[in-house]
Length: 393
Image 1: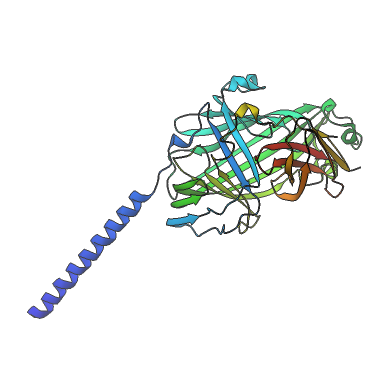
Image 2: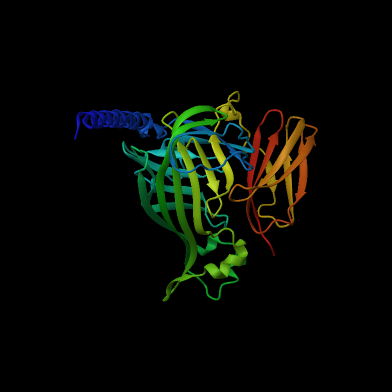
């Protein structure tokens, strides 16, 4: 090989080395740009996280997995507002049933969630509130094993799979006679059985913009399979599956047997989930968005939020629903109807001349199930919410 060829070869090798150095530096820079989620996202006693829900989110296309992304979801708008309050477990109604819990959270539906938070993970031990099927009774539910919410640190491309289940027994006297009358036997007791399977894959990272501001985030895709069944205990026979018998009474929608897909954006600058998208069964279309919003209720005294001063009756109901409230401020109000899964079904406007609210609506077009009815003052944003059970003869 002559001198010219050796020179050209050496120059080529030098250029390759330089190119490799640039690629390596770029890779190191990208790795350093990725946020690693720590225990900073774990809520503490005394925290309050306020969420807004957009049931018709625009410009919310889910991007492909990968890094260095820029998500602009600043156009999200609030259709529903609620807050999650974190307290000591001894402030709950069922603290004796969950002695290992060190954190209690409440949401606007009144459900109490008992959690165990350590340095490396946050788990849901159980909950107290209305049963997940919709019989209208309060149940204390324990997860076995505890339901994993987070395991830190969370890094890009991490994958975590977890399973849990619960079986909640309750007496026959807790059920309405309409259910007992359709059974071919006299049960000693009942229980609701639920099985959960979660797969969390951290598939993307980048910068997120929501109405609240800008954040460095990781995106986590959660695929959750769950199933419910209702069982009755018969003397000398044991537990019998009666799901098919009671399903017509429940309207079918209260016993999901499917897979739920959501995308969750996590940041060390915020407690719990910063933004989450609930997807359709195919994981393609965004059904609703839930995001933090500290601007909501900022100027209100938390103890004066009137979430328990409105009267909605009858509950359960079949055809008509009546609302009454005294000492209400005059003005324009919106009444929103949401499904059990958070989908906005109807929106009605009312001009209320104070001080009393007396309104009724026709709900005969709704199928059997549980619905949320939310009153919102269009000027002050004050929320009045109620869960109503609709039954059919």
